[in-house]
Image (tube, helix red, strand yellow):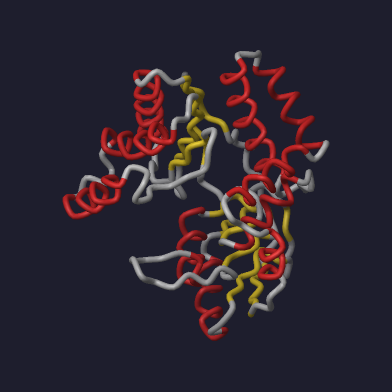
Length: 294
């Protein structure tokens, strides 16, 4: 999965890069979805059409990413940064690890809720890495845009997060696009069917397969396998542990939820359990940021 962070929030529409959707469909049937030049063109076309003057790219690699290897992720990052600079934009990229999920939430409503919590400076031990990584991307953007040292930009971002300015800006962006956080809060409170999985042995969480977690969330209704599939906004997974945590028998690992069809939670839970590896020793800590480009 490749994400882009720019000065605006938008996707392909009939007004912004209308050809991109058709080109992507053509790539799908010709087996060229993984082509780095075509990925670069697809991503940059939207950002350049929006008029963004500064771009920071998050190019992920690992089991939960489109680019499975660090080498491929670095190649894509270089292509994106070089393409943006050739178009006269300031640009940089971070290659980041996606072998395990970031934070606790996987899904639609629960991921937005987690983002709101982080913007309100409510990070906990499990979501701290996600918060720190988000600050790092924001700092890199501010550093490039304002042409100030990264340390100064990072301190500014931490300050804006702590004093509520970051969340206020998010509220303004939601309002400007016709969104309603009050309505979101009401949706968030709707009841769901839940299924909790627990550790069947004691030890340390040595791995959480991000791709398998994502596929289980997809099966629950958190995403579409094909155009026209209905998305259940409340479907998703809430992780109770992160890689490196010590667990005991019976300790919760994760909770699956969806708004309907509770019978489907049982096979999904069995599949999700396979995503967790528990070993006798704590794994060596791995950095989230693997490389900076640009």
